[in-house]
Image (cartoon, rainbow, N blue to C red):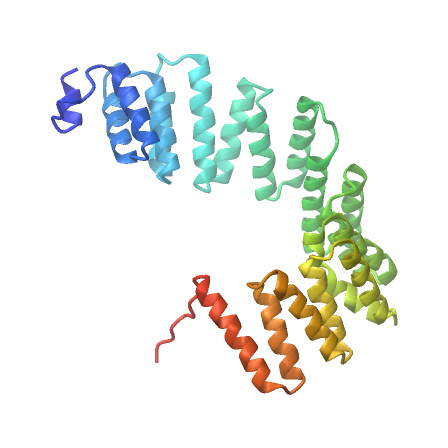
Amino acid sequence: MRWLPRAFGGDARAPRNSDSALREALLSLLDRNLDRAEGVLAALAREPRSEPFVFLALGKLYRARGEVGRAIQIHQRLLLRNDVSASERLAALSDLAEDFRRGGFLRRAIASFEEVLAHDSRNEAALRALAGLYADVRDHVAALAVERRLGRLEGRGAGPGEASRLVDMADAAHAEGRTAHARRAVRRALRRDSTNVRAWVLLGVLEAELGRPKRALAAWRRVPELDPRSGPLVYARLAATFALLGRPREHETFLQGILLRVPDDAGARLALARALAARGETELALLELRRVLEREPDHWEAHHELGHVLLAARREKDALGAYTELLQRLEQQGFRPRETSE
């Protein structure tokens, strides 16, 4: 193994066989010395009878470094060899499919993962990747079929995964103006997973577009009940719909109910402050905003709303102070305003 000292620049400590070279590469990876690990693996890969494992390891290293093109070349070279076992060939094909996915070659990734499944129909990783890829290329029917196949393999049947694909399908139909089709898809999603927040948000949108504000309201009210963090997705819609129905104060009651259950829900408290400010209750709105900032001093949206409410109340000096504090906190978090050229 006279090439190894050259690979290490003549270092007397260079490993003297492939096993010690692989150990050296592993230790280099653990030390985050990727350049040295690459040097060892690349030297091993140049050997006439280098182990397929070396190519697999080198390909993964290239992909981890974002060098997808080099990873693709390595895996394609390995697949051209006739001394590779079936399991090694399958591993190389799986890695090549992942290379294509990381590189944004979605159609080639789909074809490669399909080839993996042709050799191993129960490959869960390939099925999971394929479901996401089909959704990415907006082939939602195929994504749903793969999700069902994955569900049967994992023994879980219809559930959250299938519901998520159905919501993707509903989103696409809605974007194309096929409201009735979108509504059927989102209803199917909720039958499979009644806790899917995206489905409830979209159902509310669809009901509102169909002129059914009460049904829209019922759908959107489910969102913060299921996931308080998702409440901000619907609070503005709820406020507008309550107002449309002539029941604006019920929006405040609804938010107060959430805060009784979850007092530290900043999203609900911010929405309540906006509702109070909208009907002229400036001091109550400011009180709610300050409660948010007591718990979360860096909540930039609350700082911004505080300044807005103060400006609306013609308290310019206080508003300036609020905006100044907002800018200071943003700068502390690394935000810098973009410089403009004259």
